[in-house]
Length: 299
Ligand code: A3P
Image (tube, rainbow, N blue to C red; front, side, top):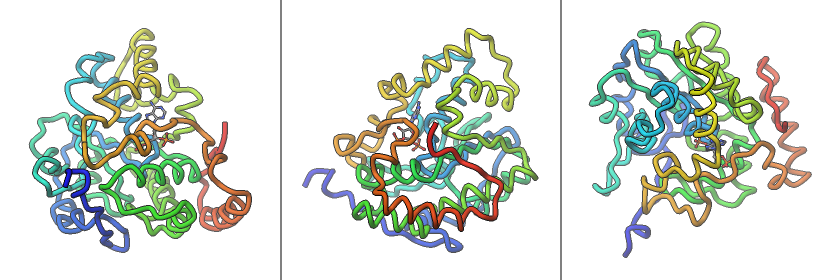
């Protein structure tokens, strides 16, 4: 058997009602006790909201636009993915916790945890947090294709089945609706910069400037323009340190659907049927009736 065939998709395991993977569940106590440091920067997102893009922007800002420094390692190792844990096989082992603990400060850490599951030390240490949200339909489409190509995730089933699972929150990291609303609420009490994928697409320079300001970095126009360029979809798609072609060989199959898939707003229009869309909208209205949060489904 080739390595590809020996990877078994994980089962989901609920932690406080939120579906995570079995390995994350087995190390949950350690995740919860994680010791954040005051100068940690946390990038929090629902999966497929533009995490990798934001990670690259943050690293570029921190490195003053030095593209070579940003190529020191893959995204995945430059910025530990806090809760992610793949115990075996040894060649594919990954422990975000171990990576983070061994990393000298200042650290930038990634998480997909919903706000109520964030280890308390991040609040206690008053860490800076950048949250990125993406409209539900595009987020769902991207998540569906990601499940297809990534054997580290449960089987998505058919498109119809996946839409249903997404709407009911029966997917890894739980309900998209609760995730975006929970973090939106948290921003009134904590140091959180809440950004939107659609704004980043529409005006990347402006959103990068917000990030730089939040990180207290004064960047020249020249450096800003350089960051806009090197974090564009086309450039990142061809950057092996950012496009996930160097990590998870045997787990991610880019021939099924590349990690850097489309990088656009409103691709959902190519996936939802009219009936599906109506059903989704009706349910969405109910689930989002108790928040001031507004998304743009197209530009
Ligand atoms: P699509 O599947 O819609 O193409 P995450 O990093 O949270 O897993 O999100 C992945 C999504 O962000 C994918 O969306 C991917 O193509 C998109 N993406 C990655 N880099 C991007 C960039 N520089 N600009 C725009 N979208 C980007």
